[in-house]
Image (cartoon, rainbow, N blue to C red; front, side):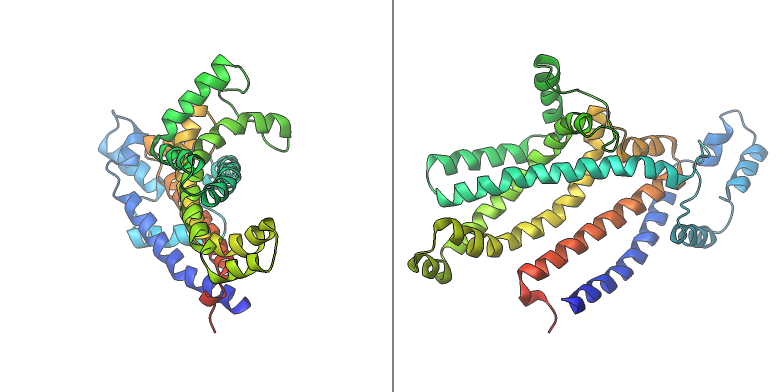
Amino acid sequence: MLKFFVLRVLSTLPVLVLVTFVVFGLVLLIPGDPAATIAGPDATVAEVAAVRERLGLDRPVLVQYWDWVTGALAGDLGTSLYTSRPVATSIGDGLPVTISLAATALLISLVIAVPTAIVSALRRGTWIDRVATVGSSLGIALPSFWLGLVFVLVFSLALGWLPATGYVPLDEDPAAWLRHILLPALTLGIASAAESARQLRGSIIGVLQQDYVRTARAKGLRERMVIGKHVLKNASVPLVTVLGLQITALLGGAVLVEQVFGVPGLGLVAIGAVTTRDIPVIQGIVLVAVVVAMVCNLLVDLTYGYLNPKVRPR
């Protein structure tokens, strides 16, 4: 397992280097000149050139890239072109909020998906299975922003159970944090739960037809032990793979959901940076988001290797 871990970590390094090239290059292709925007519409050519020189935008692209990468390795992602605030500080304020939202959504997804998939697979062909299948299809089809608005109308405005907007840090008031994070996390988690339930249901049905499951039942083992010990571990391999893809989707979906619920996460920072063409902030956010996704996928790969020893190197 240690060898598998080392190989997986080493394999991510070239990908990370390639990501830095792509992130830096794509941001430079965004139309518009940030120096001209900062200088103002009435600025002269000399004033725009002075701003560009002050920001270092007149230097060769490779020099700018090298300075950005070396700074990022030291924890310095640059300074915002508009607020003069360190990019790392802005990201540090919004990233914990987004991660807590995505993690809570993932937990809600598993809490909904695993029992639903188990019951649906064990009651295959019954009305329970059909209801679960229809529910999964609806969960995947419904847009998250529309679902969030429905939740606000029902649970906040009509019933008054949960707040519609705002955020409270977990370390300040756990109860208030849960009340504020529940609706946006549920909005994100439903689509993820629907996809996970469908994948896990199909996997469980396939595992239930294996000889070792029939042997375990023939030995007189309780159904709970057969499902928990023999079925779920082997059926979870496709689910883990799907979760690796959904982590990135949850981080991306959090940007939209944060807008609906007014959550001050990384999404609000990203939208503000794109609107003002704040290149250092955009680069920093994309880089951090990619690194977080790569770390999560690495953990998923390690879990996959634990569940399926066949993928480990010999």
